[in-house]
Image (cartoon, rainbow, N blue to C red; front, side):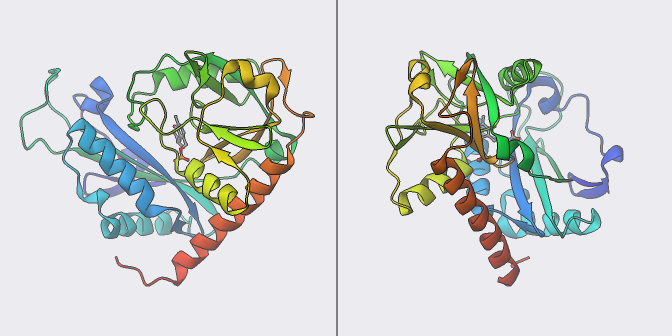
Length: 294
Ligand code: PDD
């Protein structure tokens, strides 16, 4: 597998960074993950906008990779040389504040950010989707800027591990009694026929899949309320699902010991997954038809 690191293409095993990189020392950076279908990135601009927002919030100068044409060029070469132009893949971009002797304050002006890009083969978890997945609940111990997609993912790592250790797929994080989101996906529920999910503020990542799925639901006439449900509401959930780049729409059929609905993927969830999948395929196919700006 090929990687891009600071202007160079090289085998991933040969890509190395300084031990003084602030990503390594402080988790001082941001990342993005794109879904790729047949060589085309899904929602290129929305992910780039979120990356630029995170960089601006952290006051890291936006590198070239935040430009659409530059990103497309890098993506095309990585996907081509990694034999990923057909089928599904993910593209990962990470930007850190760069390498400099360890000080908590920023490094000297002009310290170049570290830019790392890689691609991976992706296989959507269809078997799990058909049966539906289980989730646990866990306290949301994260900081108050969860809207920035930073590299500091320790609470998310511990949450996902706790889920895996009891055979569940995701951990729903609870802050002040409210379900915020999963370790790496948005959480969406259905109560009284209404889609409910945490509003986009500083307590969750503004998920791009979340946004696309809510648009699809509204267009289909399904009522949507961007109003979080609570831990106490969990027994009232008629349906629940995760939304994320690597999960698409994933039905949740059990939370802790609570069975959701009748314990199988619900009708709204299934409908939204079908519509989302069609949208993903259609927009990536349309991307093929567009003249490349690279
Ligand atoms: N995670 N919430 C969190 C905390 C996430 O980390 C993610 C994505 C999402 C869903 O966002 P989107 O629909 O834009 O992918 C929500 C990525 C996939 C990851 O960390 O690998």
